[in-house]
Image (cartoon, rainbow, N blue to C red; front, side):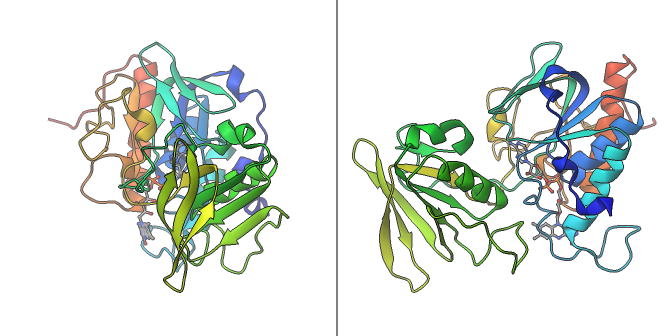
Length: 327
Ligand SMILES: Cc1cc2nc3c(=O)[nH]c(=O)nc-3n(C[C@H](O)[C@H](O)[C@H](O)COP(=O)(O)OP(=O)(O)OC[C@H]3O[C@@H](n4cnc5c(N)ncnc54)[C@H](O)[C@@H]3O)c2cc1C
């Protein structure tokens, strides 16, 4: 059955060469719904997602309040249906981390480690699973051993011992990238499982990869550069994992907008603000779902936001008046 494959398994090597009508960052219910509306409206549509199994809906075990879906399904099942529906209308999905955007020009640019994607409009649908607080020592060693992108920085750690801190699929994937360079990779996981990896599913085995479950990172330590991470073990005892590089992918409940800083206005909490048509103060840039300052965070609301954002993007591209409520 097609739904057993992910839309992200389809390769699109030329995606970086195209100019899309709509580039959507985030493939949760907001992004997938936007993609479905945009693609069905014959807009050339691209969705970029960094960890398709780790968004808020993807990690929801059972969802029973999504209209039209009777009984209980897992969040990921529901999400895959939405994504395939969008893909059936022509939307393209790529798996990549967006690290920055440029929204001043006619074409909006979306930067990932391997490619720059370009769209006439941009929809930000990255959810709200970022961390609030930094770890002690993290800020001090940023750029001197603390990194947020193994894909970008792994080559600097050839033969070294490194630690990856995270509880999600992205942390796992980035650890696997690091195993190709580092002598030893410690994946430090605060909980009992990796979000997005079903319980009981076998984790990849590599001779130089060690999993540390139920181990909480406490502090990044070092002198001129990183020397290790202090962690709390399941028995409550503290110990230090030696590492010259520390890669952070911990989840929380703050809007995922770090990559937008300086490019788009954010609230003090980091949310995007959008009008009733989901347009941000920057023309042609839209926000949808949990990343938007909104009173309720639910899958159905994220999906509705995505639909509105896509309709607004269509109007923007075709020079039609903005969406407004009837007077
Ligand atoms: C445990 C839990 C249970 C819930 N239960 C329910 C429920 O029963 N019913 C309900 O209606 N709602 C529920 N919710 C809320 C619902 O899941 C969210 O409101 C909804 O998923 C928000 O959709 P979204 O698309 O905005 O964000 P998300 O679903 O979080 O998707 C965001 C996507 O953006 C991607 N992304 C983030 N940053 C980047 C980046 N820099 N580059 C590329 N991609 C990026 C992520 O990988 C992710 O796939 C629950 C939430 C949680 C956490």
